[in-house]
Length: 285
Length: 321
Image 1 (cartoon, each protein chain N blue to C red):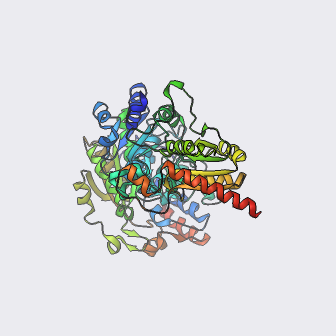
Image 2: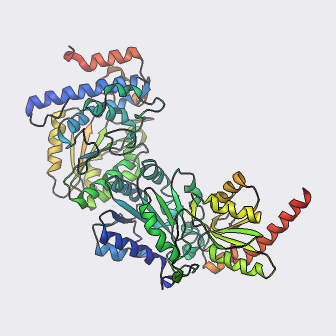
Image 3: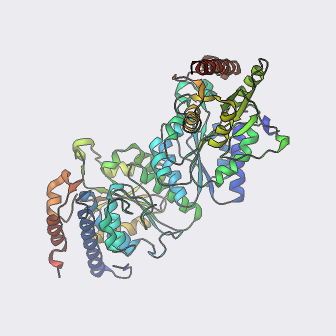
């Protein structure tokens, strides 16, 4: 899969949806290789990753550390396998490497590690910190005046961390219009639904109150995601929050049915086959 | 004369030079720029001195992001708030992610004086010392600090600096133009009966203690060990092989700091009796330095008394063998 920035409309949507399917299949292969992992929160962000890596991010797989490139901080670091799935689908490393997830000596640990994985822009895993790192990068980009966009994906459960809001305040205060943040609003966390544990509602109003340009969209509609990014890039003096209404485990029926149970769940070889058939759907063969 | 300068001015002048002459260094503050003296640079270089407000955790991770973007950030707050309060951000965003961030914590131990127990870092070294590869440095005086700061900058990794903001006790003679190495302890005074290893404001107390003990014909070797991690094993072991006895003197809880670091290298390489001076399992409290030195028994006379006790204990040990 390669960037397809020239395609528009249905052609573009078709391309991005195919890319998202590749990412989901890779996620299943990756987590399936060790038999357990954070399936739900990986599958829920496959579509935004397809749009970012397939179309919007200015990156070059042959120069993964190039200065001035766009960057992504996956602040919900446990979605590492989704990032690896995307990087492999983008040609950063062979797909076979996905099968080393969490095995001794691997370059693909559960949580994102910039020092181990080619193409990972920031280490994350202890929740709440990655957004601050992205704010630091966005400030750095402003100092260097390099025109880069800094993207960050945060979890909804992660948004219960106080540091998220410290970062939000600073981003708005510094008028970081080069910072585009996505919330994976799948409304589930380990111990229950977000509303049961510690509700974020009204999440859009909270981010607006913190000085962000806020959009709320279907997090599985690649066209809507692409349009939202374009709008965010036009922000003159505000950082952007794009709230992605998503489904935890999206695209795999038994993961979706497990609801909060799919945060981290086991995945047998048989389940992998079922999952991949569902992901391929009518597009098989 | 640099010895008459505030230590914070040595720091701010260094950062100013780096901003003027390079494009890497940025400084971050969490609403204590007036306290560090960085406020003047914040006005002079608003892009390069970033005040994040009272949000130290955010400051640490923002600094990590700036480092990942190619900058060398210096972050500052009061010692407790850039160590124990942000321990996880230091650990994950900075150290685990291998980011090149310098952490300036003011004022170490009892030098926090009237800010009292909440602001008095007596545990900061212990909190950080188990994080792999972080360097922990406590300046002895301004002469040394000025020469070590470029090394703190050129070291590619996180360094925690315990910085006293005011005028520190003067130990080294500026006129001598001595060389200093971030990773080497310095034998300030040679002796043969006991080794005193000291850091920060306790170095000058150790020198005074050695002068008191000389009057009783006790020959003291005084070592300044400004870098507590990694501790300079070679200099300490070479000294204890000669003296066979060591006393540590630190402005910190004796648990987890200099005493622990010295005990580790001595017990593993050349076991000798070790006594210590420092705060002994107590929280900080308000007071001027002179008062707190009395409360925590951190005066030169306390060190001298401890040396005499150590010599007596060593004699008893030897006679019982």
